[in-house]
Length: 84
Image 1 (cartoon, rainbow, N blue to C red):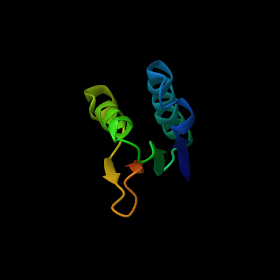
Image 2 (cartoon, rainbow, N blue to C red):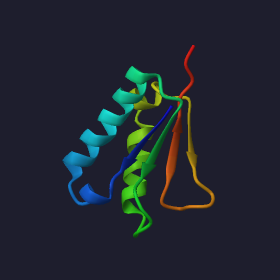
Image 3 (spheres, one colour):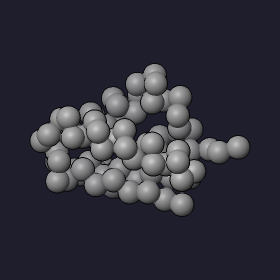
Image 4 (cartoon, rainbow, N blue to C red):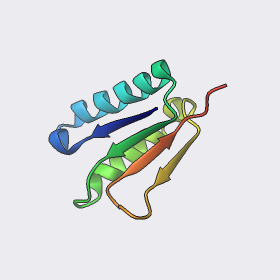
């Protein structure tokens, strides 16, 4: 199962970004999703940096397996989960 989060519509609302990221990680855990695709878009790269900082938080990092930046599309980040 793959979940997708597109941040284009809330790119300028910091509190909504954090909430959306928390929500998609929670949903991935609840549904045991193998992959979450987060689309911060290309833009200036600030939103992507914010997403990566969020994913690097200690409490969040413990919840997923690894992060992959799409080499073919700068505006996309994959979060991989491993379930036992």
